[in-house]
Length: 224
Image (cartoon, rainbow, N blue to C red; front, side, top):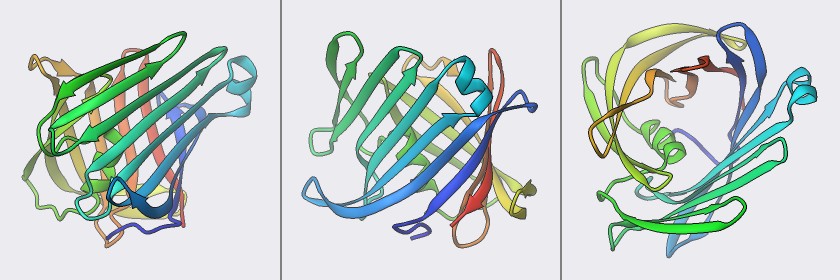
């Protein structure tokens, strides 16, 4: 397994390659009994820079229970604070029933269920499961994803390794180029890329996305 309990990865978050927007920290908190199996409990927390926080306070927390045998998501949550607006979302997988249950809490609570393909992941679990794979140039991977009550298909093109400059030095990493389509086969998002180190740890070195309001990037600052 390329990650272990206690692993802590810290990222600088930037906007449009210029604005230092904040910091994100990903931690493998523990490995524990969960849903008749065992699971890694992974937490990612995002906080804005002091300047942005003074203008508009935000906080994000994403977590996942990742089955330690299959590396499939058991349950994932997303909690966000944007000013006075607080939102909490949950996805829980019923693997034998091939279904996912969604719950969203804002001013009211809503729930829904969705039939999902057998190997469907939430976004955070998908990244950690990718770390356990080996890659070869030109390979294409397909990952079914469920989020916010909808099914998506992520096609990932494995590119050549590249040198990525980080605060802890230059790191050789596989560049993965995902393309996302919804259940109507319509494209979602653009300019997505993730770099995973080509050593045994398969560290997520950098993540980038092009959004309507600018380019969004996470770059590894520290790995422990």
